[in-house]
Length: 356
Image 1 (cartoon, helix red, strand yellow):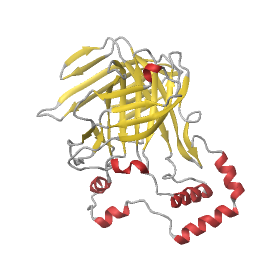
Image 2 (image 1 turned 90 degrees about the vertical axis):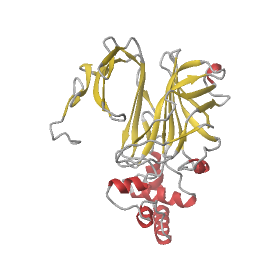
Image 3 (image 1 turned 120 degrees about the vertical axis):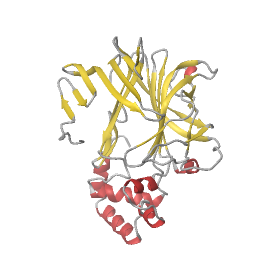
Image 4 (image 1 turned 30 degrees about the vertical axis):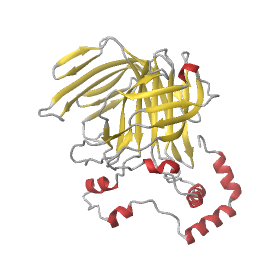
């Protein structure tokens, strides 16, 4: 099915057209992704009886493409990395609707954000094709404890047609806030954050600041074959920009308040859990200034779930096999000798890296 050899998936380009069963994405123009029509159908099986859900969305582009990182490389080094771009401020077109349990509602307006990141992996967890870069990343792991994976990603679309795309990567300093399943909520987590501010005319400016998470929500619902994790996730997020950040004064403090009060957690197919959902945007005075989206990954320990999906018992020995390995003494020595003998070549290779 993934390879498209079953006949369940149809794909063509110029114009872009992607079909899977009752779902499709169809561009209206031959040489452009937008405007695009999206059609989807599914069943909500959470209740006593299945409820049909369907939508028909037309989206038109009002601003250009935003290349994240270094001209769309975020990051890329030694053959490992991602390409990453965004399209903010997409507008709903006439004829759009949603349908729930046979009741159709026409959409008068709406604003969307399209985010597309794809590639071959992330450093240092990825596997660089160049052996010098591979040796360098593994050696760097010996100098400091490997950082935890995961991030908090934030999309903000304000009522004045400005937008922000922000990210706070997980760090070893905040390790006490990840994989927490206790009975009581956590304290206040502060994490460095950076991203882009997009002005009304589409111009972009790099911004920095930090996020503060003092309200948490526990993941308590799941559906087979995935198990409840009881993991604590960020609920409300307070975004504070640095004093010299090029953002309007009224945007220096923004709070993200979840629209769905019970939390929204889901699963990647291989067993890792994430949390994401729409939020209200409020200024420092608590006034509504827009809508956004909060995505949190890397908070739940997914090793036991991954083993379960593979039909393997989650014994301590098997869980240990999924832990990150460090170089042994002999391996570290071998890497060090290789790097010293090829220092100039390594410098040249690292000089070609983008977005680190």
